[in-house]
Length: 342
Image (cartoon, rainbow, N blue to C red; front, side, top):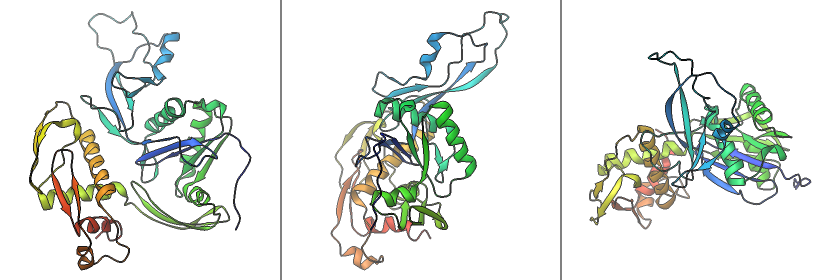
């Protein structure tokens, strides 16, 4: 069996997924950085004024730590206000985003939204995608992209138009000396030391299967569906609400809690914070569902049968707000939604 390797080129490897991003150095066994792809941002109205060159304006795009430890990344500076504006007149405005990149999307802030760069495995929000690159290079790897070749993964169904825009960003924005885009199934096969195989990939927003032969992705064999881990998290939240009339309370909203019996509603006192956006609340609840999946759920080694699942020992789980339950067949039934969506 052939194995693939090459000369040491000190390349940077970036794998931006729908849910998590991995970044590191080529040739190493594990990524140096692993963090969520969904980041926080706050939109503000900024007056459109005539820009004045000022060396201090260049600091706006540099990653800087916030008081609570998050990494703040601003948009381009709007420039200095014009002094020729007639008194009493209203200046036109534009939306500007202040980004907060952190291991869990940033601490709660009034009016903060949570957004991700991907949709169905391909880039949709290029602003967030660019900020993830900046955060990975400057704050996590602490390198200059213009000093290293860069390798980036892409979905097997990515389009040539999106790939061209990706190459443009790499060379014009980050000044990469060399750049290569590789399809995810090929990287997955090479990661196991194989150049030929069938790769099954279940991501945050989609699942796919594709054949790889001699290091080439055979796109005609590609089979995929728009169902992934995020959909499973939503399914778990729906089942908890339907069967137990329970909605998890995220950590940021818990002021105090008390002990409760199994499957009893939590005795929690909330902060009732003002300015909590729907996207932030949903993201924090999905984070709890993600932890629930990793800790309690399991896929049976044979086709699902309720009688067989009930013969397995139950597993306890407690949410941060105190709600707790003992999971029997349910912890095997929930993941089956990926294999039998109906």
